[in-house]
Length: 258
Ligand SMILES: N[C@@H](CCC(=O)N[C@@H](CS)C(=O)NCC(=O)O)C(=O)O
Image 1 (cartoon, rainbow, N blue to C red):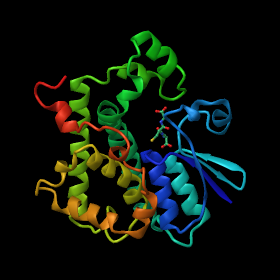
Image 2 (cartoon, protein in one colour):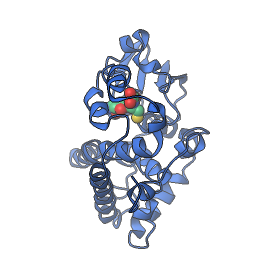
Image 3 (cartoon, rainbow, N blue to C red):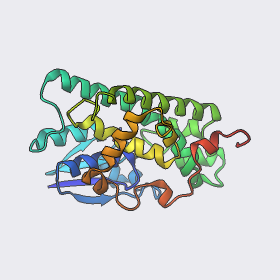
Image 4 (cartoon, rainbow, N blue to C red):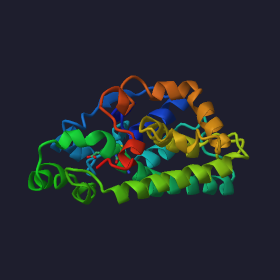
């Protein structure tokens, strides 16, 4: 039996849901209310001491970290394979996965918070923000402290958008030989980055590939979105613009906006 502790709008949860959907694996959905800090309660921290979603529980065994969970599922349930067999191809897939974790996964958090999540901290001064929001998070304490109740600086935002742009650029160059990041093989590399790209679109950053200069990337994303599994992984409530007031990253960076 597979249980997934997750949140609809969490990109890390979406990665795992997409992997489960591609493999046609049924799971018991356990929604965790991040806005109500349910992921920081004692019962949840016992499952996941990092205090983040997702958490997978398979036959009572806990597996943490979205990319690790995807690899675990692919090894445990190999009927639909999302990992290539040749060692060199597997290395290429993991190189993409590490890059996605290091660069765009971290970068997309900045426009996500500045553009959508800051309203959660309305009215908090620096001291209350630290006590009630930052210092209670095992994994993200210093990320939250750096952000503060008013959000990241414009230069942090610019740096993040530049990193997202360079990730799109790098993927576009690989996708010229598509249809997928590894060529003919659809793999976990495509799956783990898909929610980040979807989030970029939700934050108004789709001009990074819809400007006519990244046709291979644009076609890849359309191909990905047309897969039935994609719709399953992104049900109602999966996008920030459905339930939050979102200020686009471009608007945040426009001259005159503070
Ligand atoms: N490396 C972890 C990171 C998980 C993570 O950051 N999850 C976010 C949602 S996408 C979260 O739970 N954030 C909670 C918070 O900001 O306190 C993974 O990939 O599973």
